[in-house]
Image (tube, rainbow, N blue to C red; front, side):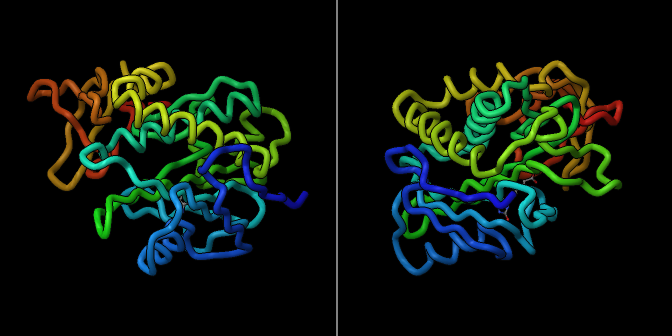
Length: 258
Ligand code: BTN
């Protein structure tokens, strides 16, 4: 079944929509276009396949043709407001959309990995800059259907996890609406409601986690997030804020649900 990606029923997000057959990375396409000049807020690129999909912390995001939703959306966050919370906001919007399309409970592993039944079905990579104005590209990759490589035991597809067929194009329409709504709420009401919505769906808080990063690692209990989206981990040095750009966090028992 070929997906037919259409303009969503939104005011601005996704209204400038480019659908590509195959591209290296949709995040990269938007970033290159931005270098050429101002783009409309909400400008979106969707690819049916990515050949160089990028993940967090320099990882590769496998993006086989026709099996997923690979999309990047440009926003211009208000000055002095951009921070890690935007990436959590995108995860909350993804969870809204998945619940609407599939009707299944879905969670978020900090900061914003979509998880169902302890397995990852989606990831989000937000890239941002401040020239010539503050911009952020919200890149979202959802394994919607098809197979995942056997070696990726912690990964699944949305269709498999939900036990039903899912069309990436239908998911896109709901995701665009949810993202626009959550983004507008954030602009008008601030970080706190986003943090509250994220707390309602997280699978990480309350778990023992291993934090690893360039400066070393430690084990501790994930106790909360702050309003900037940093994970608060209670370790040997007390409660430490951990920022998503620097570290990976995994559950001490090796499960993925954290
Ligand atoms: C992660 O979990 O590591 C984040 C994965 C983000 C993948 C998406 S797919 C669309 C967009 N383009 C990219 O190159 N990456 C993001």
